[in-house]
Amino acid sequence: MTVLLDERVPRTLDEILRDWARPEHQGARLEAWLFEDEAARRAAEAAFAALGIGARLRSAYKPLVHAFLEEIDTAGLARARVRYPVHPEADSLRFLSEAYPLAAMLEGVETAFEPGEADLTYLVSLEYADGGMAEHAVFAPNRLRGNHLDEVDLSPAGWLKIVGRPNGAPDLDAPLDTEIEQVFHRVMAALMAHEWPAEEPYAETIAIDVAIPGIERALAYGDEVISTREALHEDFYFSLLEFFKRRSGRSHEDRSLQPGQIVPDIRTGEGDAHVRVTLRPFGEPQDPTRPEQDMERAEAAPGLAQIHRELAALPGEPFEGVSREGRPVRGLYRPGSRPAVLVTSGQHANETSAPVGSLRAMRRLLDNLEAHIAYIPVENPDGYALHGRLCEGNPRHMHHAARYTSLGNDLEFGQGDAVYEIGARNRALELSGAQLHINLHGYPAHEWTRPFTGYLPRGFELWSIPKGFFLIMRHHPSWAAAARTLIEAVTTGLSAVPGLAEFNRRQIEICAIHSGGTPYEIINDVPCLITAETRHPTPLTLITEFPDETIYGDAYRFAHTVQMATVIAAEEAFAAIMESASV
Ligand SMILES: [Zn+2]
Image (cartoon, rainbow, N blue to C red; front, top):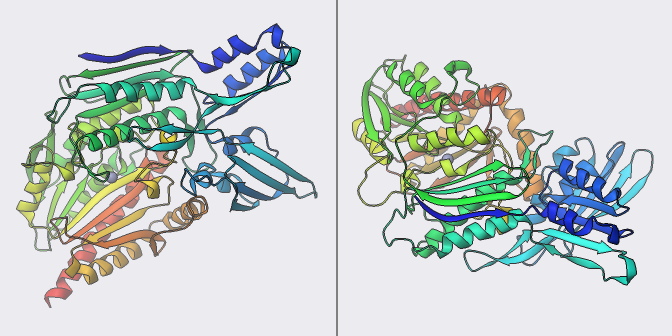
């Protein structure tokens, strides 16, 4: 094992108390913006107050949302107008996005969002039912910082303002390099400075272990949760992929880079932050213990062993590939007289409603002796195991580190010979000759951000806010009509799923307010993207996207029910399309 960084970073909140909660500053008025939860900030304010120092400590992350949660009176609120900052160094909708999910939090209030000035301040005008009015200027502290791509980001930042100091001492009004910002930049610097080998993969596991205080606050809308630790995981993971891609001369869109398994594991800490970056070997494959689930009513992702047991109970011939870490990638082939269909799930292993949804669909489809199916329930078992392990510390986080294989690539975009995970999919196509691939996926169930390198997830802006169950149809150019017929039939079939139309409408409405519109087609209440391309071996590829990272209980059950219904509707519709084509 190689240790690249092992440090303790002092907690900024403690440093502010040490420096300013002192009798000689009595009479001063202090405002600070930190990546700290409300309880920690209120406790610090009380410590200041005991010394006669007025202090207000706010959140540096999502400051407008926190202002509505902590400071702005919403009782009897009738109308709200929010002018959000528009800064030349940021996406024009960046601060509207950071205000999410205010439109949902202000349910029943007539709310309008308008672009404002570059001054990093939200201007909020409120009208109450009793005729009262209020204005608030909510500061959004941000600073320009260089990043790992030699670009400059406008990023949320700690801040300190002090006025009224005794004996005419000067006022302060400046960024504060908080411990979470320091942790992010020190880890990136250590990894960027390391002498990586010329050949990929650069290591088996690149592990970033952090324990740090911060915000983990659930909101009363959908699965929303504000989490600075989740944001740190996401920013490490994608920033490192971007850094390695650029270093190897690849484009930003590339998904074939194989740097090794990148694992940021960000745990709740007390006091100072601890950070340790190591390069380590995989070790023997181990799968985390997960509670046994009744597949029809599963409330959480089952263990890989249970999925493989359920697979073995289905009729058909087994086939098998192998993962980078040596786990089996199990599949099943069952010929029939209907047109062959390939069904896969778990390509991105943090999208956990898909394996259960596809298994439930198989139980039903394979009852029909005519159905012709090739099926792989978990294409990326190493990622699936990693997701389970990361969920032990942070069950609700989206954990994108578990998305790709342990080589660090999207398994669909490998290099050279088709070894490891993609081998199983290639075998399924060989056996079945399927012309439709139903590929089940998911995306974050709550907002996805990268606050240490701007805010919006670069390249994935469309997926930063949940917008309901989404379908992507990719078709070879000559299959355009069949693709359209298939998506019409599938979305029509899905309208029979209780609650789906309402679920989608609500999420689309709120997402559209905070992201500036609906840049996709909506067919039968399902947002859809239909594109012609030739990258996929099958002429038709139907990709599902349920906002399932990471959900449990009724929400999880609903998610895998929608996935199941999609597979059944698509297999049926495809059989009808192929039959009418051959007449
Ligand atoms: Zn996916």
